[in-house]
Length: 318
Picture 1 (spheres, one colour):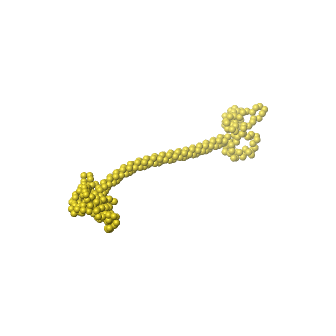
Picture 2 (cartoon, one colour; picture 1 turned 60 degrees about the vertical axis):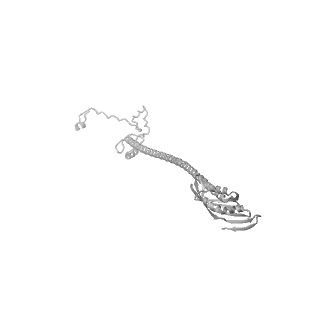
Picture 3 (cartoon, one colour; picture 1 turned 90 degrees about the horizontal axis):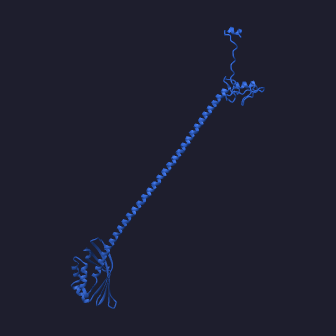
């Protein structure tokens, strides 16, 4: 139907304009499903979480609109956007925040986990390093112990070898000194022991034990007039060697001091000489020690007794 207003505004006359289609009502839960129609004869029940428009007072609506808080009935808020949209955006925002928070929390948790894992890894690496170090220390100690044992064994072997050599040298020196001492002792006893009935035997024994110019010296001391006196007195001498002191002994030569006690029995008296000292020089000839030179140093004491044992004279010499 054409109206006067339509003609005045210049619009084409048209039939009655169709009413705009009603937008589906969104429930307060934001599920997007249209509210179920109410049964005939019974008013529709509001969805859960929705407040009935009839129950809301204008003051509440005004307050809600001014605050911009979302409303469950989908009405426009104070900023001109649907409350449900705000709720959705808020939900998105909250969800985003929650997501961001979750991501942040998750990130933090992940970072914390990585940190904890890193710390655990570092702790494991530290433990591994400690074990490796301990193993190296134990290996080094074992090597040192082995080296010490080997060194000890070598030292013991060397010590034993040296001890054996030293013992061998000592035995050799001892044997050498025994040979020299025996030769000097035998010579001293032979020199001061004689029998007037067999002076030639004494001379022959001494010649076997001496060398060099000793025969000439002996003949000068005991030959000629001395031999006649011995025979006249019917002297028989017995000598006993007390001590032999060696010095400068080597493989070829030696020097010794022979201490001899002597008792001479004659047809008239008994003569006792104590501590006669003979200095002798010995040389080794063909493996045998022989006396090369003799020097009589004197006696410590001389005593003379009668045949009945009474003392007739006593002489002491320092």
